[in-house]
Length: 114
Length: 320
Image 1 (spheres, rainbow over the protein chains, first blue to last red):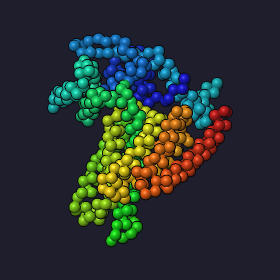
Image 2: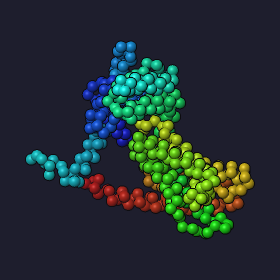
Image 3: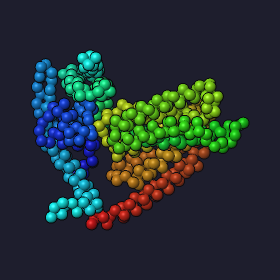
Image 4: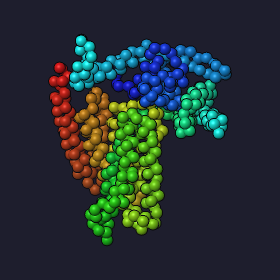
């Protein structure tokens, strides 16, 4: 299947959900950590993106609980989301591999950069 | 003071959460506000304000059906970057044409070189529009939205300056040398689209076709309506624009990897040219159609040749 390249925040969100289900604020913190502090999602933008990913069937609501009278939803990747993220990771890796090859930076069996 | 800040932020977030429609759910709106409150704890005053503004904007967008999980929001997110690009091209050409035309009024010095104020006025509008378009096309929504706001402010200032009686005394510029009202309006609308569209979508590949189709049809319709209303088809700030849309359509047709149905959509602006040329020019529509299609054909051939050359250049590397 020929996927279009994902927007960086979308890739980061799916990556943040790849190893474990997370709720809203945990996702903000996780995306910030994965991107080295470069991408700091704001709450409105985050939930806008989550609503879209839910509608697209790429994520699902893993758990919905009320903590001290407040709703807290935990989101998780669906099988489609996992497949899309794997495809995107492969695409990024392929580009990175080619960039390294052209720069003469690929790893050699002996170890270390060429 | 430090105790008051979280309270003020919490109150502001309560207000922002109240902007969500009931259909979204009170609990879900509260959840967004709570998340924003947690994120705001680590932020400075500016960061807290941006959190509140972001929640408020999301609430309004959901209420208007413009969030990215709704069809209208998705369409807007795909089209807005290209509309901004087209607005930038239109603003550039219309500004230059208006400035040139103003130098040719009877009694004025013909072909006067551009003065510093004129260059500054031109850049004041074009720079933020160009930056908006570039950032939006790259999916950098935070930057695009900030530049769009600057472009809106610039357009409003230029609109006010055009009606100021002391403009000539202050700058040496004639009101007629400023971008026309229709240019400012078209630019402002495109910038508004960037401001209101959901900030989590990439510009779509098919979107240019829709924008080009509209961009071809709307100036023609505006020109026609203007001619009907004022009985004078001469003063049309869209004049320089109508050549651009068919040419861009031809380039998209040649360069974009399109399916058959997409190619048909791309061809619509070109196929519509003979029909649209009658409102463009009621005196000699056939000549106008030829005038529009000739450069479009040349643009198509040039783009197709460039695409072939790039593919040949890349092919050995890709196979290797």
